[in-house]
Length: 417
Image (cartoon, rainbow, N blue to C red):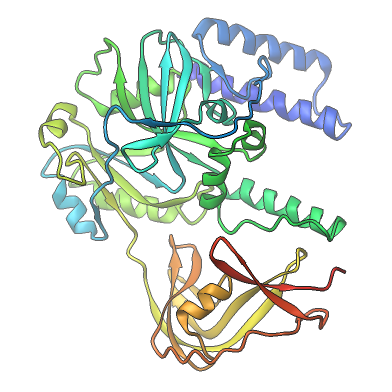
């Protein structure tokens, strides 16, 4: 694992140096240093048999297709049963050891390797049938194209776009719109939606530009490998093959509460979108002996953060115009304490949500922090529906227009300037 960790460091260093040199006309290391690190990476790739998709020693050939073919999964991909109770999570352990990890908020993907090479990638789809996205998976930033294990390996993981990459993509769209007012590209609303669209692109070059990453969370099968009945050993095996595994902690009934508290603190600054935790039994045979219900496997359970909600009064809706002409409604309400901070604003996103909530000034509303981070309106207790949608732009005074895209209504300024 130390070798693959060093390889990831080298790939990051070399790619940053190349970007600085070719895109910014800057040198952050000498040619001698670059060649030395490059040779070290080549040697490690030969020794480990692992080659990462973003390694400077390879160049991914991007592919475009007319449509994504469908394929049935060998085993149905079930959802997890859920709880918001920490005590219920502790009691679920039944005195056994388990792995507590992030429940990442992206798109689940199944990878298959044959003879050490990535041969197939399929989205979760409806759990029975998914879309084949092999070319796109080869463009994920951190997926190994080749691994040292030569047998057939099948694993599952989450494709995600980090918050920092998401914000940078939106920043670039904003700059493009400022330079070219006729640009039709609008800002993306959240990393999960952007990731879903990026993973399912018909052109893998687009996927590559979106900085999609993959975190393994389940080893489905590995030919003739003895994992000594341990999920932890499975994760260690995947790390040795060069995969990023979802961060986890080993827990028991006596340690799980502290572990949950630690994750709860960490999520405040965690760069990867997460909407909870997953608890997976360490004992593989015992977990599989529990079987499954019609909807859920019994060897794992998901923990969703219990959203803290507060009641308040809506005082104003501020219509905020972006550089693209999109005008987003922002709710202003009496300040409340949520998750340890004072909150008095929440994005309402678009006209469709304004109408669905039946908002009006003076309405009593409940608010919460989605995933303990982003303030949102949970419910409108009054539902007056009296809020007027402005017919003039708050910035330039030009006429506004409600446009409908994908069954979602949004407000735009019609002024081309």
